[in-house]
Image 1 (cartoon, rainbow, N blue to C red):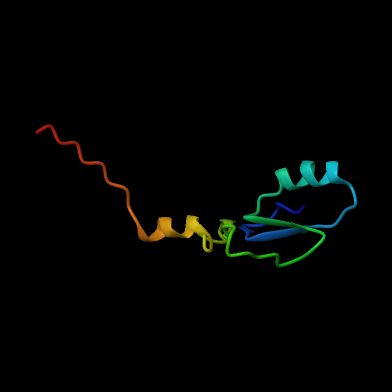
Image 2: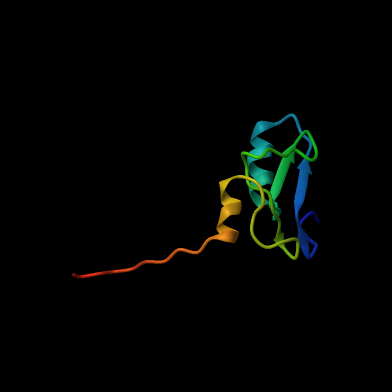
Amino acid sequence: IANDSPYGLAASLWTDSLSRVHRVAGRLRAGTVSVNTVDALSPMTPFGGVKQSGFGRDLSLHALDKYTALKTTWIKY
């Protein structure tokens, strides 16, 4: 039921079982999964959604990918 949506920005999981956290969080199709909390954000971690909830990531060094492009130049001189 949790994945039955065209969106996947964030999900919250409430449990006291660490094994359930690992099992369920891995199966949730969401860009962020918070356990026993909501809206957990940090500038140190990437934030963004999956499916129709976003493209790319904000926050953290991963956000720089939106503003840069890699280029390889081979020169034999």
